[in-house]
Image 1 (spheres, rainbow, N blue to C red):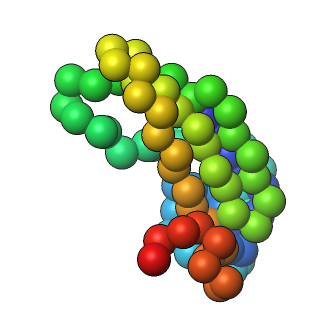
Image 2: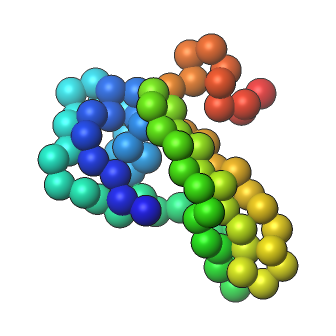
Length: 79
């Protein structure tokens, strides 16, 4: 996955929160590894002020949800 545009709320997923960051060129989003040997495929992604990416592990077909961006009202579900 690649992102570009404004990252006012950290929604680009590849930089620290920066109210002035605007990226015109796409930059790859680095997702964390679930396990060292486990690879996954992004199935779907949606973004606005925050982003959600649904992934599935290739080996066990376990689904994982990655979230980042604006969390002012707890919308990322971080607790």
